[in-house]
Length: 235
Length: 402
Ligand SMILES: Nc1ncnc2c1ncn2[C@@H]1O[C@H](COP(=O)(O)OP(=O)(O)OP(=O)(O)O)[C@@H](O)[C@H]1O
Ligand SMILES: [Mg+2]
Image 1: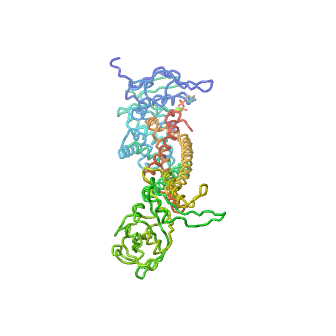
Image 2 (image 1 turned 180 degrees about the vertical axis):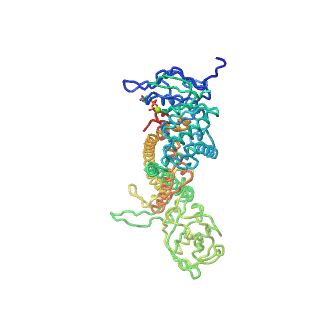
Image 3 (image 1 turned 90 degrees about the vertical axis):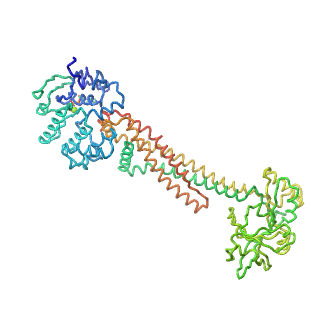
């Protein structure tokens, strides 16, 4: 115990039940999962297997019906709104499956949103957001609104927004689902770089060759973990 | 700096729905406009009355001959005489000073100038009772009056009308109804006290007027100053008793004179504007509440429309407080903009009322602040519920909202 490092994320017997009228669906049935610092984890599974549900809970957007979630050794279930907001803002970068960009704002302004809530000054916000957009190769699209961009470009704005606060954990729900293979490749090498910088990454994907770049692949089926294996990438 | 950003987001949101915002503000605009007009009218009326009271000095009763009826025929007859004034000025308990006025318009000639002015024959206490000050020279004395001297005091506007330097006029002679008078004083301007401007009148001793100019014993007005310690009613009763005795009015018959309380006159004007003020206060209250409900309604719509945005902001680190403030600021800004337009509307209506209805109106900085306070309060009170709803949205449900 003493020489095994404490996990950044520890999920214990996690259950997420949706109740609709009389019936209910367990999107997650009983998930146990530890994620160590600087791990690169891929989550795979069929559509409807609970991947997004799991990501939302890890991202502190949703709460489990049963079970415990420990983040950096702190019990998330006892945290209040301010603490959760702080974690979403500073600790976690979340790339949504559906981007969730604000339609009336430019790419730059979208990327600035998390910085507004971390209290950064205007000038600093501009600089950081500009740099983040540069990282995803969109420095020439800063003033464009989401409706003026392609799906792949929107995806990259969403990634820039998740990275801009320099979070220690990056959660990405199908980050390459909307990208052609070469842009997808760029994003994946960006993730490799983040991994090498010491970040913890959790990526949901359907594609085997994407998952293979991770150190570890967790497979979900009907709300349960059915396999958890380290890849050849693991060192 | 987060607050500045909050304001920017609010303005952007209002701008993106400008027409809707303007319609929403309408209630506030009318409400604030009514408040501004109401306060402007109230302040104006009060100021006018204060001015008049100050100009009048203590309360002064004005006694005039009244049209009295004889066998059903109105006879506009003069009934007040210099003797009445004399009777009133001795042994009175509730009246401290009595000023009779013989008032008629005459031709006045100075050099090659000819004017037609009101000539008032009166007693030396006139300037004290009616609060006039002298610019040059002074008032005639009781001795001047007794000797029926031909001396005259000019109102402040006379030198201008005569095209002469006021100071240089003292000691010069002027003709009133072709009789030569010596100018002994020029008054300071006092301004109109509501119904007429006394600054273009001239004053001569009562006896001089009676015996040298008009030739009869009638006076048009007797002013009676009420003692500080007495009530107006007591003074009126005392005057009535003495004048009835003097005129030999039989018990049961009507007075052949009228006693008017100028203060009451001013107050009746105040009451008229007060009624109007209450009406406006009603409109203001109703409009502000209706406007507030309009604001609440539109904010609820906005919260629903922007549910996804709220979810995104929460997912990116906005606290409940941030979201609450966001929507509260937006409804407050909406109301403040309405207040600003309402302020302009109120100022315009006040100016129009002053111009066309002749009511004095005063838009003060104070009333502007009050109006802003009101609209900000409406924005916050009626914005709090929509803002709370926005703040309490669950992030993941908000993100899933279509
Ligand atoms: N708000 C909800 N109410 C009811 N059921 C829900 C809700 N959200 C998700 N579910 C159910 O939970 C299950 C898991 O959904 P989830 O979105 O986690 O799937 P997923 O693995 O992300 O699928 P995909 O690959 O298509 O994105 C599904 O069966 C879905 O119907
Ligand atoms: Mg999903």
